[in-house]
Length: 423
Ligand SMILES: Cc1cc2nc3c(=O)[nH]c(=O)nc-3n(C[C@H](O)[C@H](O)[C@H](O)COP(=O)(O)OP(=O)(O)OC[C@H]3O[C@@H](n4cnc5c(N)ncnc54)[C@H](O)[C@@H]3O)c2cc1C
Image (cartoon, rainbow, N blue to C red; front, side):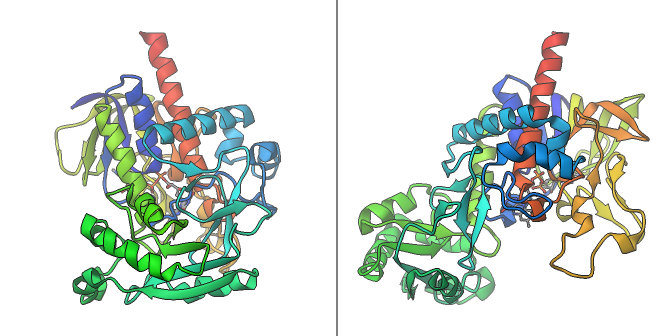
């Protein structure tokens, strides 16, 4: 199987890299073993919410030099401030072209409401998520937070408690939609995505609208767990029209409807552009010839190799098995690439669980063009992007999606530039 580019991993990084390349006519394959971090995410995309010294970031593009000083191995520092801002803007356009709509832009972070009712700085939030400017409260004085009876992955009282502390008058209640009763009988099936598949049916959306109109009588806005609109992106807009008030969604515990919906849109766009998505397959090993990857061998295609001019490693971090931790070492399993890591296990974690954890910064070490390296030498047709990269802490710095999107766009542009030179 021969492609221009083979991408290992179909999460946010792999898909957006593949989309950019396919938009420019490249023949791309994405081989993707399993679910990605999007399936577990908030659905909001962080670019840079906090500097390593803990300060909150309001204007991310203005602090990239500070970031490079505080964290010289950070992928943004490797690429440089001008490149990072260009690639972030390109990523915003790419997401819109996939039919996704967001609040926010890279010049100014905003606050999004979390399921606990707290506010967290981020870059882009799905338009249904409650947001405010960075120093401002949510735009309503009186809201209803509505749970779903029997649904354990969102507790309205928890969110209400935090918002009440901020001076918002909050009413809590539960939806009564009989169509959910059958699903409710099996608690392990009573999850955000399954609930949405029931509520999104036209006949049930009407019942839901009636129920919300009743609950929304005395408030300015209604906040629901994100259990509506998985396969029908217009469902929330329809509810808003029927109720006549803002209907907002907050992320739940996984599975994340907002993240899965994003994954579906990206995958659809990639495939519409002619990209080949190979779900449920995993790259197990590679043949190298000198400084180039020649062949990839996958679990499903056994001895039929995948060959490509360029290979992009977008296999995620420990969470997605893009990195592996044994008892005494951490490593990248497909190519055995050089790593940013600590050799002593005792140095992988800090006892205080609220401290920044060193292992979160572990990952593949690259040159400034994001080539993966073996024994200090770049593999010239292999690039690493997204969460598999080392040198940054996506949790403490709030930069996970930003690194994935920026590195994906940067590598796509590198590959396109190389192909133009050789054509
Ligand atoms: C639980 C969780 C929640 C997060 N929530 C947020 C959030 O709300 N906002 C935010 O900005 N960031 C969040 N992040 C950070 C996240 O890492 C990035 O935002 C981004 O989604 C990572 O994308 P990625 O494509 O690099 O990696 P991943 O999403 O991890 O995708 C890697 C993919 O590669 C596949 N894969 C691995 N090995 C192989 C192989 N050998 N062959 C083929 N396929 C392979 C995996 O199955 C997976 O599908 C979260 C991270 C985690 C772990």
